[in-house]
Image (cartoon, rainbow, N blue to C red; front, side, top):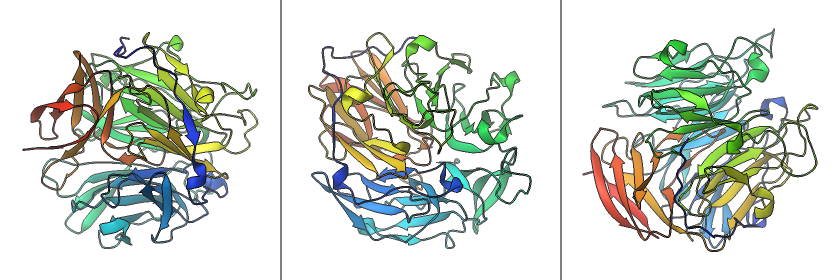
Length: 489
């Protein structure tokens, strides 16, 4: 495995300061239906260039928190919704205002975004099918020529099954755009997914990856990949390996520079990094790469860890994608660690990841669930927000000294898919490429819709190639230190 080895060298380790007191008081709470979930959506709801926050509340109402700059935040008015497990930002109607697909224990909802961080319930107006499922995962993509996105919803345990909860996983759903809104189609079998991601897979095809929780499917289930074009699940004959794990979250990024995304799957116990192979399949990363993070790295609890949200991002802007994993016991599972700190795995020059969360100041012992790395103060360094179960949200400012330069890119195109979901951005400095897909989904119960962030090390400029969803490409020479808007001609 040849990981990207671009870097500035000699930089200090990552460092964060706790700014949690800047947030309004909020926590994700509730009974067994909220053991999972707890996602956070991060996006700019008032076009001021600063990321805002929508946090799931579980038994508590969800919360919209607006960024006022300078690490000052305020509550904003939003329809009061309880039972929220997570949310994903997406511009469904292409009106330049970000909407929210809200996952719930019970009927899911769509909040239509308007000016100045205003939202209204558009579930009925947009014809979103309603049922009483326990939804825990979401992703979306645009079919060619479609005016609205196709969306997939992952449903967890069927609460109405009298023989449940074990071996009682509910059907998942694909929501197809139709003349009257959306048409729901069951995606079966369902194995209790906690994350779904529609993205270009190792074959170069658009696939729907589902990471499933073995705790409830118990036997007979496995990780799934649904070929979107062929409308079928892949099998071992397609090079798709049969893997069963306690799947929680998905993170996806090209770590080798070959234009194929590696995939991180969080779990109870091992956190599994899958390397994309040239032939279109995946293999497990070697153990010594440092990503398995199967036990707590501090705190003295030697039992296995439980991973939730995972996210690749360049925390020190050295040109290499680091990895954050939110950790925390489901509730009081005795076989798993209860003192289970988050991971911050820094990718080094040798192609291995090393643990830095404790030294960075973010290795708290709360039951973390959703999270996001985003530049909340606009200084070019990625900060961190974490949603915890039955504990307050956390917010950390990245104050890492001597970071490299950064480049941020916003994509725009005319038509319904305004944010160019399905595009791939490739950034090259000194001949070394980094590439990121523009996707909606993955993580655990929450995601981002923000400029895509790239660390550049000491480079002052970068060659940027955008492969647009329609297959066309554009090449641009861009300066470091700025947020660039790239519009498809």
